[in-house]
Length: 133
Image (cartoon, rainbow, N blue to C red; front, side):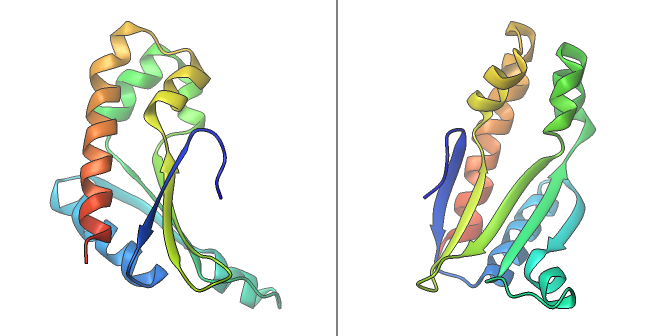
């Protein structure tokens, strides 16, 4: 369903509701939402069809800056992103990057471990909250 370095969880909610719930969970703990992109809406404006698909871009400089100080290329994958999407059967999924894949991709060192652990555990907790029935 998804490729290496991605974590995907099922959501009982629509794509829009899943992103609404994730956004509320994120802002509830003080994270910043930088953008919400409605890929399906943009496709429709271009005269094309796409199943519901929304991207949420979020984070906080306190979490991302240490990673970029370790390896500036990590800014390519920051802020953090989560994609809610509907498959061909109508099921909703929420996909985000695995923090360990992110660390390997950018060759992050031991100095980034604490920030990575916080991102990994915090994001898993917030995603779980967003997809809870």
